[in-house]
Length: 429
Ligand code: EPZ
Image 1 (cartoon, rainbow, N blue to C red):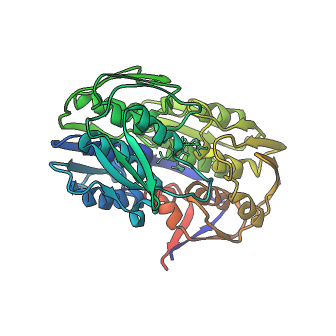
Image 2 (cartoon, helix red, strand yellow):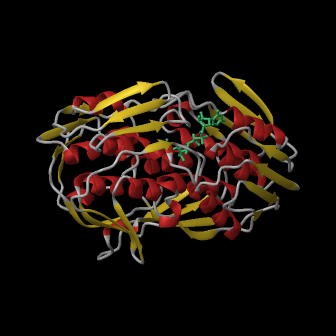
């Protein structure tokens, strides 16, 4: 298994191109199930999760062509992917694949809408929480599907097709919003999704669906109104830049010090991240090419943050912020409100000398003057990159094990950081 070695202490100066968003690319690829015509996606990030979803969709019979980089094209242009679901050969999403990547469970809605049936493995729990899918299933039932659970699989049927409905979510769920939206666009009649997630990735999927002929109002709001259509066409769509990758590199630059341009970043998608960075004493400039991050000598100030649905502070940047605050001049308070078990990085950061105390859903991070490099273990995608951030400032060498977690969501991380002066090397297994 690959490892990443970091020798800390280098400041970061230069440009980091931001890739397409993992959490937009995955649902956009799944949208291709809704039409027999070709959906062309550009700026698709080269990630392990994208490749795994490709296999899952090919299992359903989708023809996928990926046009890689053209000579001279800069590193971050991403792949161009052509997806054609002329026919759905198989409406089963098997446990072997779904258990590897939860988002593949989202094929349920489009398969039901297009084929009137679906057999999808329940995704199971994961390191950061139990992550049930009850809201997905209730939404499908409200749209007229019959749902049964047999042998760890969701058996869903809508022989007469789906029917528009008024869906009100008790809490904000990105996945359940994607599922309900993707199903409702081909349902007969009108659907309202109340208390919908308004993450930029939801907006990106909705805008792509409109290009395919869907009728959706309230995009980027917490109430989506959909008038079902009988069929959708193909389209061409570019994946939005990754706001979590942007927040991550912003914190790398904030931790190491220096001056970095996050090229192609969309500041409007960063919500509370920019505010928190500025509260922490890091300069953030919104510029034409993206977002510029610089800290030259100013001390890191402690912050008090609760994670929340967009536009609140993203839970997917919580671990990164905790790493940054390990070296603030004072005590920070970070409350995780979305997932019940998203503090796996705390013990690993403590191995580098961090001083963090957990009280239920809240972490008290007492800033220390120095971190020291050590062997650490990646436990999940975002926890693993918090160890990179800490390693950039730690004296000596940090060795991160099990970096396959990182490869799921960060494209060419060590190249991007090394290009700005970091001493980061991948050591292949
Ligand atoms: C998406 O996961 C993202 N994944 C997650 O990013 C992200 O952390 C999360 O949204 C929140 O922003 C992708 O986009 C692929 P939720 P999702 O449904 O959709 C509960 C990363 O690091 N819930 O918004 O699974 C759930 O347990 C990943 O890239 C139910 O109770 O998250 C959680 O507590 C990690 N029942 C809360 O809602 C349901 O049916 C929010 O989860 C569905 C969710």
